[in-house]
View (tube, rainbow, N blue to C red):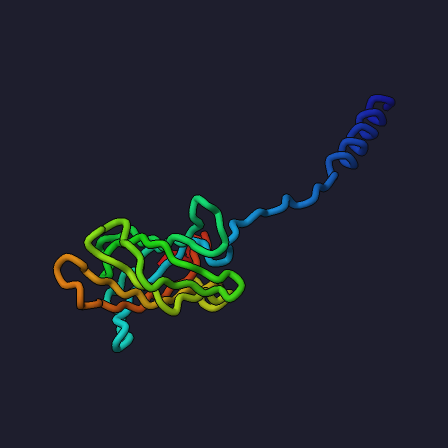
Length: 171
């Protein structure tokens, strides 16, 4: 009987000490958050706002190595997107959640330059295919091929939502 009381006492003590709670860790974001992230986007014709492909593509926005709050990279790796693959440096205003650039080299295709206009991120501004509320991104992308036709711009409207990480939200 004495052994049972000792075992019960030890279980109670163990239960009390195992319930110790800790504070949540402090999350440190990059200086350009909430502009930075991974996005599922679709590409539209900017003239008549029609969808150019039913496919979704993954766009990345992230900070520069200098880790400043006034510029970021915009990167689309898929050559299959109607606008082609691109990576360009843009200026941003984190407080306004806006970004753009008048002229940027396309680091993935040096024969092309990029213009990004009216870039914005809207917190809780979209819905995923699974119905989850997510941040949205949109911008005008103007691509100029400086070697073959430097006077002609192709203009695309990029629209999308932030990747949630939930499997049911993958388009």
